[in-house]
Image (cartoon, rainbow over all chains, first blue to last red; front, side, top):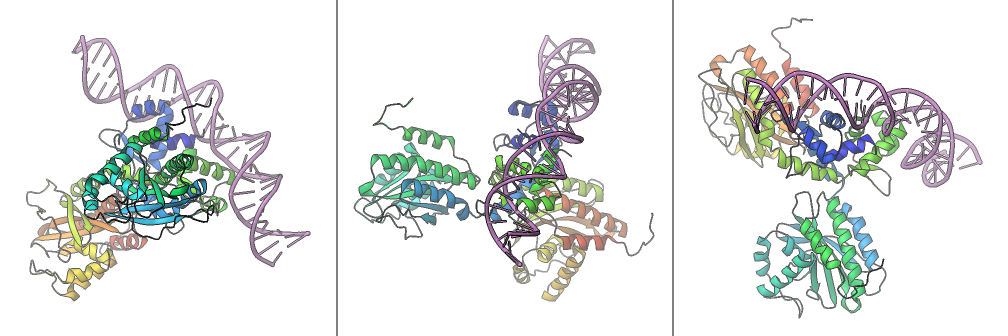
Length: 269
Length: 269
DNA sequence: AAACAACGGTTTAATATATGAACCGATAGC
DNA sequence: GCTATCGGTTCATATATTAAACCGTTGTTT
C-alpha cells in the first residue's frame, strides 16, 4: 500500500460524530505507528486537508475540502453521476429503471433507462412522482422527512384500483418499506406496472431521492423480484456514493433481511 | 517533499474551469513524471478522491470530497473559523472588528471582537448591516452580486449627516471600494465611527461576507489607517481560506495598490 | 509533592517504497 | 504507413518511509 493511500485513509476517520482527533487516538484508530501518522498528518496539514485546533492540538478536516466539493459538484451533476448505475440496473433486470430526486416536498424524475429486452415495458412519462402511488414515493415517505407524510395524505389521488387512498393504507405501505428498506408500488399508479424502489442518500446524510425499477406485473416472477431487489440495492449504494452520501446502517440491515429468500432455504456451499 | 504531499497537490489542478484532466496533461501541469503521476492518481482513485471518466479516460474529482466537505462544515461552523482572525485583527488595530455574512440581500453580523486598548470604542449593536451606510455593506455592493445595488438604492435611510442618500453618492463609494479592494464608511452609520472593510469569499467563489474594523474617528491617524488596511487584508485572506474560498486576483491587485503609501516613499531596503 | 501515565513531537538506523527513462499497444491525423 | 500522442507498464536505482526508543510537557493519582 502506498504511503499516499495510507495518508488519505486517515481522512476517513473524521466524521460528524468524531470531528476532531488527537495524534495518539488517530494512531489507534488507524492501527499505525505514531511517527508515521504524524508525518502523514503533516502532509495533510500542509495541503490544507486537515488543520490543528490550536487549543486542543487535535486535528480536524481543513478548509480545502469545501473548495474541492464545490468543484466536484460543478463537474459532475447528479444526473450524470447516476447514469452508469441506472444503465446497469435496467440491464440486469431487463426492466425500466429510474432515478428521482426529492426537492422540498416534490419528487422529481431525474433520469431513466429502458431495457431493450422486452417489447412491452414500463415507460416513464411523468416529471413528478406521486408520493403515495409510486415505489419511489413510498421510499421518500419512509426514509425522508416526517412532514412529507402530512403533505402526501392531502393529495391521495386515486390513479388505479389499488392506489392507496386512506391515511391508514398509506401508513401500512410506509411501515412495510421501513421493514424491508425498499418501497413497493403494486399497480398503484398504472395498472400492470409494478415498482420497487430503494432510497438514495447524499452528503447531507438525508434522503436525496430514490432509484427504482418498474416491471410489467405479468412477468414479475419471484426470481425477477429477487434479482431486482439485489440490483436495486447495488444501484442505491453506488448512486449514494456518487452523491457523497452513505447508507444509514438501519437501511443496510433492513436490506440484508429482505434479501434472505424465505422460500428457498437451501445453502450452496 | 513527501509522496503524500505530491499526491495531494495533484488535486489542486482540478478547477471548475478545468474539471477533467488526462494523465499526460496532469503530468505537464504538475511538472512530474508520468509513472509517478499515474501511481498517485491510482492512490487518489482508490480512496475516492478522483474517478476516471470511463469514456474519455480523463480524471476528475471523486465523490468522497462531498462527504468530507459535509463533515468539515459540521465540524467548524463559519463563526468559529473566523474567530481567530477577528481576535488578531482587533488586537493588532486596538479597535473593534466584525465579520458579516451576506445571505440573499441581507448582510448579517456574524461575530465581533472588541479590543480592550481604549476605554472609548466602537460597539456593534446591530444584527443587520445597512448596505449603503457601513464599510461592510459597501464591500458587499462592490464585490457581491450586481442586483444588490438596485435593492440598496431603495433603502437609502439617512443615519447621519454623511450617510449617502442618492444613487450617485452610493455609486461613488462603491467604485472607490472597487479601486482599493476595501470598503469605507466615514461616519455614515454613526457619528464619530469610521469603518474599513475587506471582502471575504467562500467555496462558491462568490462574495460570502466582509470583515471590518470600526474605529473612533478622532484617533484614526494615517498610521492607524495603514495598519488597519494591512491587517484587514490578512484577516480577509485567512477567513476566506477557512471558508474554502480564495481571493480573486483583481482584489489582490487592488490591495497591493492601496497598500502603497503615497506619503512615505522612502524605502528601507 | 512525588510518581505516574498519556500526550504531541523528534530522532535513528534499517529498509521498504518511490522514482523516471525507456518501453508498449492503441488511436488519430496527415 | 508514417508520426505524434495518448494511457498505461516495467525495472534497476535511489530516496523517502518506517517503528522503536526517546524527549519535554501536562494533568492525574496517590
